[in-house]
Image (cartoon, rainbow, N blue to C red; front, side, top):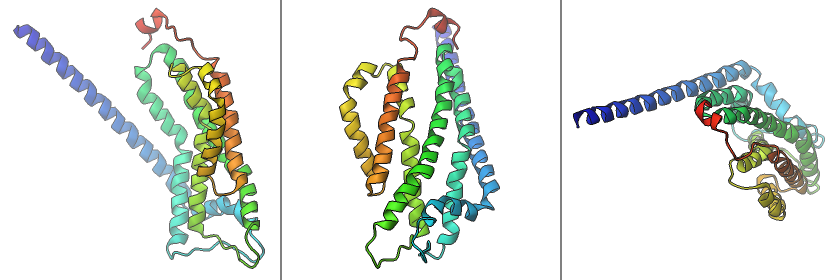
Length: 260
């Protein structure tokens, strides 16, 4: 009886040590992510105003003659470029952040899971950047041209820099997340939570849903709403296609015996 209690205590201590080790590793990797973001931010802060001007270029080019952007808050000329640079630092450091995520979870994955996890992580960051680029180079010029020309005659367009940053970040987030649809679809199918056939049957609801999401996440103009909804639909179809190329649900015995 005493030996059994000693064995249970030893197992409990090993479990606690294992949990503590995971928590310490998680802390270290979170600190590395914070340090990476801070280093990138400090490296770009000197050019914060130039970065903001680059971000505002699609709007400034389409402002009516004798119009310009304004700051209605006395601290906005400093805080707005500061916030923009901080958020951009997170975007730039994202590959390193995902590398830390991969390094933390990879020891607990089976061999067949490791084979597909890294390509999914890599494709997710590439798709996120593609969403940001699509918003900046395609959506912004069209949306700002429509919005600046749609105002009533006699009203001077003077966009506030803080308001512009808020709208831009909202659209960046919307398009960045929307471009992750293929990865999300593939994960849902490969994990067994749904099937390709089920997703195909729900296609009419998905089409309605993407247009509703486009209406909620973009400014109140038809152009940006359609430019978000249609890519989401196309990306959903891409996700269905790539889901068919994934691993089968059956797992070989070797994956469990020597997979970790």
